[in-house]
Image 1: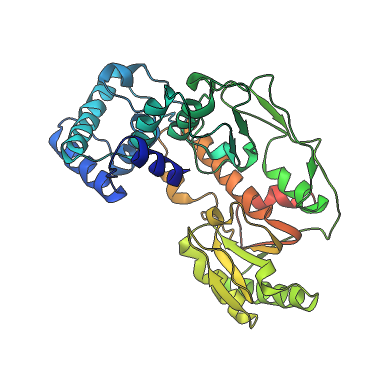
Image 2: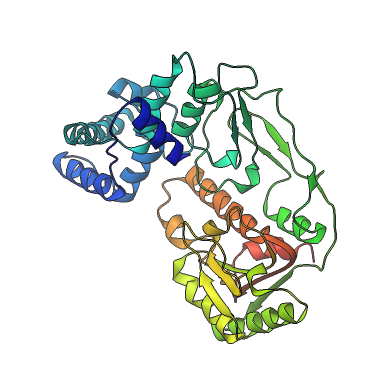
Length: 379
């Protein structure tokens, strides 16, 4: 969607100069240093900017004061929010002086320009992975097709929301209440894997606008072996077990490119690579723009597993303090934030597990992630 936004901006608004992530970090750092009397850390400022101020394109202190901070549950008194706005307004001024836009700003400009167009660029907009759409992107789509009957079609799974904090679609003029339904047939994942992975999530999920998603009635069209959930005394023991499992899959006729090995973050990636090499197989490490390679096992983080599928998947290094990630927990501001962290970490593991079609192995080093108890509950 970013590429479409850039193309439409260039064609209908003019030359586009986007600020980089590094630009934003540096401007936030400078602005925070110029404002006295606060204790906001760099991580908090960056996420508050990206999920609230920039996402909603807030233009004034009044806008910031009145916006609902859905997904940002850390409670802030009005004086703290005033201090925050004095930091963010400096960043906005600096961006304007440099003639640069953020991506949400780009989407906002395009949406405003195209909203009154006699001939919009598209008759209909179809969006997959809709659970991960952001505020700016949805506002952009609403501007392009929201005023036409059936102009927008969304497909998504709340259980796979891992990239975006929740927000109200209805507040942006996109109301799907009474116009949506849940698909019940799973064609991609075996009954055994789907049933086991579903234990990571509650039986019902709902979006901010109250649209429920019942998960218990879903059925898979095929069966397969039960998933394996195992913990080991050491990373070396885990590596050997995964290597044995990979060789067994190969003996069953599973091609290397039909196998994926995923870990929580880059800090654990060497454990995944070591297991593949110990099995005598080639590995290709995924990045944001890459897919698999013929003859090689795909290795990557759980975030990069999104949208992929394999006949067999090993989810490795599910250790205590790895998932849920301890550094995220330590940054929590209050109990509501802690609940959000645990929820998104569960969704992340769910996504990784459900990349598997036929075979799933989930491993860690003792005592293992607390989430493994939920997976084992079905065994």
